[in-house]
Length: 260
Length: 279
Image (cartoon, rainbow over all chains, first blue to last red; front, side, top):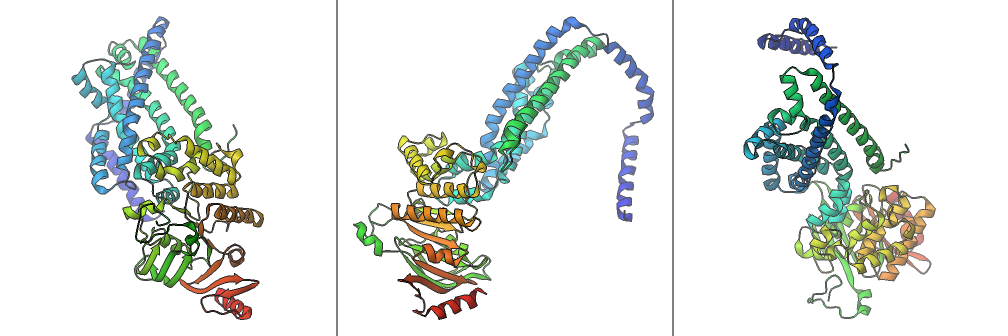
């Protein structure tokens, strides 16, 4: 390793130490706090099994919110990503759209949720709107990037037969970027389920509402039931998306034949 | 009536018998360049009659592909004149866009959409005839679907109708590309080294298929080849390009090869000229 690299690593470490001091982040407190964790962990083992029913229904509500949010968000994101792709549009079109989308992505979903709770009141609908906004910002970016990366050969060949721009998009660009899209939608749904689980913090519905309230009242055993349901659900969704990915996406890659 | 458009024009060809003698592509002293400094094509003058099978032969980097791109207007010349069916080819020109639907262009990499089925790739050739709304919802009129299925049969892929295109072999992919071009109901077919990566047997099958289609649909074909033997076997005329210039224009008359550029009929001299230029 050359001296220049050593210097850079030294500077980065010094910066971390200085910044930790500045914001009063003391590792000693972490070590001293470990026994507290043990208390929480012990209380968490005292689960109340009769809460599983409530946990199940609130998880279902969370999944429904994430599903609606993902589907509507993707439906809005797709046409937007066509307009934001540099290889399909003039600067006059894609620059303002990209700026707008970048602004959308600046807010995490929890901030969107607060905004929509003010707008439409407490409850799952505010959460769904927040998920939609976040999905639009995210999927559009992923999509216009994969549209910009598609093979230029079919685009060139098909535009040379005199088709209109929207025909080209519909019959070449969309099918060529579709394998990425399916994978992105799965990822987004997975991510949205986890996100929706915490939107309850600001009163935007879902299972997070229960978790935050039980934690507030130090009822860790009750909170644990809900957290366990979230954990199981996320694992199941993860397992299902791996299966779907293997079945449809890996095969769609050119020339690849996968037997599972 | 021009070959490409049904609208009446000053160049009127009222019956098909005159088409065989009509010049469909005319190039006069054409120069082309990608960077405005180095010319990839120089002093190209040629005329291609309707209904002929014209081959352009040369080594890699000799400017063959550029010549095809000039014909369908994907590139415009730096100097000189090109007329394709009396029009100046330019893909950016809306008027020429209508004619483009009558030029079947098969690039070297074929340009197929790999994630869709064979039949969907073929139907792309019909898009210029389909309304925007219908094509958005992928609704093709029944007669177009019937036509696509006829062409599917013609290229020998009837058993692979709904197969995804990326699953096909090299020869089959070329058949799909030919079928897409035929679906355009073209007047002119341009193909860039369509058989160069194939084994001899498959290459012959593909060339025979194009020859059959050419007769059946009365097409003019301009095909780029790497191999001069292939050009001489299938084409009426063979232009040999070297370093951007046309050095020979060969044709077979009886059992003799004639260089129409110089009028030379001495087989020995033609072969010598060809060999010295190829080496």
